[in-house]
Image (tube, rainbow, N blue to C red; front, side, top):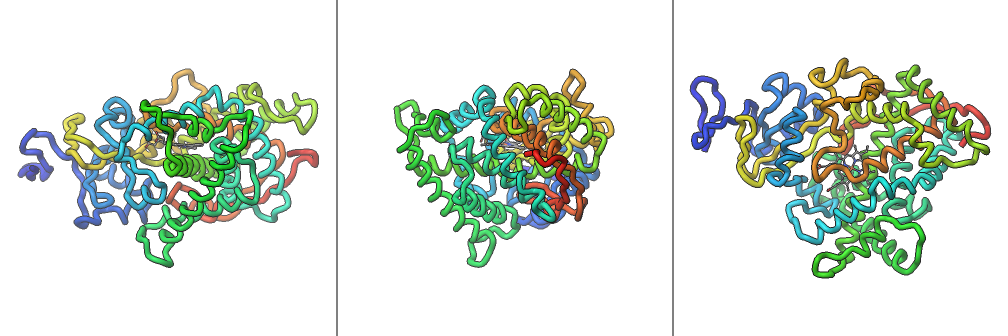
Length: 456
Ligand code: HEM
């Protein structure tokens, strides 16, 4: 039970004396969801933080919410006291992804552990050759296009790498059709009107979700009937058993594949788009990346020789560029949890059932944690001490299982990009789309020129 303090106007928990942070409920029930949707996370959170401080209250998705934007609070919610906070997805999104975070059944836990094991750093190292083939395939057509829409192409790359790692499927007309279906799911997720009404993007997304599940069903049957030397995540999932010796039922298997492919698709594609944008705008840094990648290419006997894990390890400067892009782009700007019981953190009481939104993006670009935070400066990652306030893949038990794979993807893509092409960013550089991932409006069109005829 909350009352207003007569002095400060703040909400005080009359039972425990702990305070609710300052903030605004805005319109009852609707709260500030539409403001967040329209303004995008960066503007919404920055304005609220300037007004109310680094921890504030609001009302999102019909639920009272506490937003916090310090790395310490992020660690508290995501790692140290993670058992007190469940992952929260709006029901409309859970339905699209067939993910129901509130149900914590043992089989689901076993499945996610299996997924993590299958994407473990030791195993993903073996995927360099396949990522290499997909990067060359995507980049090979760029000079034949008058204008390359970067985000469309990076989607093609990210989708096929994820699909290959997860199901062992190489690019084909069938996988292109699946990617198209996934794009509709993304579109449904990025709309503010998530009602299942014919003619809406959300309705279409639900239809496409069904088609994707059917495609996964066919893939599972095919994979069961054939033997492959190289194990993918699906093989691990098909073998996995819970403590009673029960295997994952097919419908759950398909749902896991859908959630996992989604996880590896749009965020990664948006991230690669930012990599091109930031490098295109910072020519000096691009030249240093190019020098590193040219040295690796020149060490190859034939231009057709693929990259190896040893090459990946020999890309220290490019790796700092990847980290700096992850910081500045913050393609996952915030994470949402729901408190399973009353929690007090630094004098703030988070009541059971409330949402807690951990705003990663804000501390990624805050001068409190990074010198000249808006400057693209990979050298900050050359220091022996990792900068505080850097959590692009989250923290704690839910930390992204795809993080090693995505770094390999980025380095391989970067290698073929800078050794094959020079490019110029054209079109809008500042107008943004925010949902489902932050990207530049228009998908960052670029004009490319080939550097050598034998490249890629
Ligand atoms: C730049 C690219 C990526 C970024 C920034 C990113 C970021 C994240 C973050 C922040 C989380 C934590 C979510 C939470 O705590 O609620 C997460 C979870 C997850 N990510 Fe990624 N991710 C990326 C790429 C990938 C890739 C390539 C895959 C798979 C191939 C993947 C699969 C997943 C999955 C399955 C989860 C959920 C884990 C769980 O429920 O325990 N991600 N990702």
